[in-house]
Image 1: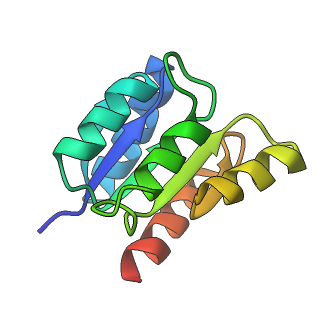
Image 2: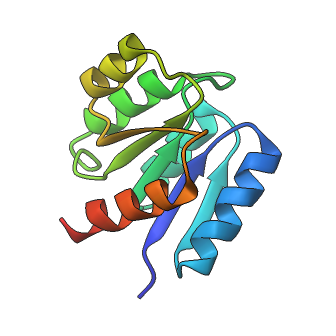
Length: 122
């Protein structure tokens, strides 16, 4: 059975690129284009992993991650923050929110794939 991954990201081109990459690796992909839609999808469907941007309309990724991690039904779902915000304070905030990984969009896609596979093995 394929692992289900939810991508929450408002940049359409980036969503397309990540979706193609993940589907090529054999993952089933769902997409939400803002924080509120992402939270709704995360609550209605059991995903194996969630990838979220930080800067998004309606709800940022930090708040989204916190709400997912404080929901007893979804607290064990790994969350990867995939963002352009690379300052140490942003990484720290991501950790405080319960993110399992904090990856910069500028990094190699292999880093994302390796981290996904590592988190799904746990």
